[in-house]
Length: 437
Image (tube, rainbow, N blue to C red):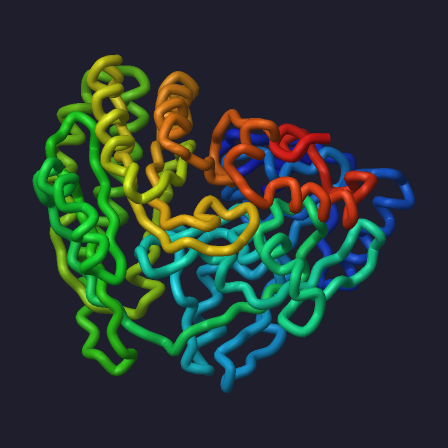
């Protein structure tokens, strides 16, 4: 978001910039005009959505395009289950746009504040061993190139470019429209249940294989995993949503309100963290409900934090988790945020963290007023030793040479970047680090 005085900063307060100017285009043609104007002045230009990336991937050193006004449904093909959305459309607004057509997104991440273009461009994913990340749901995009031209990519036009452009880090052009392959609307039956951590780790692959969606959280300093298992049901299934009062207590009062106060206090008195974590696993994570898919897959998080997440081969998830668990104990750290573990199917997007392999995701967080570097650096070393790939929108330290070793199509992506943006109109410091100059 851009504050008075012209400074833009992301949600996690981990990136900030004062661009030369800020523009708010209201149409794809407005984006085209902005890119052409930037090129005429030899300025770099970047588009931002909700600012939910923790890295500097969207930082605009010269011209910042805020896409808040570029939202809504462009068209719907009900017969094929496809919809085209303006690129700035927020994920949490999409269910209402799809409802008249009886459609839903196949899968979602656990946060829905992002724009659709930002979510796919950084590799946002959900959980479920049979389901791919959001970028893999993309069947078409329209973008503005560095030359200021419209480029349409779908199954009939420039189809070979889709695996690169659907997850392009904002390095190949500015997306103005995104076409998604949707599925018939569905509901989900969810069971949130605490279980002994060792038991969950011993059976994690069986749990993942037996459910449509499985994930778990672990508060350091406890021996309990908070599991979430969900099954997909037809839209006609009976819904039994969470009672409003109970949901407010769990998600607003405890998970956000009280938790925010404890995180803030833990900055001053770290010793309170373990006792609160043990209390948290007793008070939350034990409920059963059935509701519309987007209400089950996503949740509200208002406590500000910073995050690092790595994708590792699924068969490496337990060794990585055990190593992180031992690390926290050895260092004597007081970690206030839970570790989150999720799963995803392989896909073909060139820069997807799940490219060519079934993946498990391990995410670590710290309250935004803590310095996360020591913790994140140590966890990162563990993940890298087990074939990890960092989430593009979350904090990591890798550069282009290190990333090239982890992505088979990395050089193909760079070649396409050279073709579409030879003058680096869409570059910034982050992209220079992860892709090279």
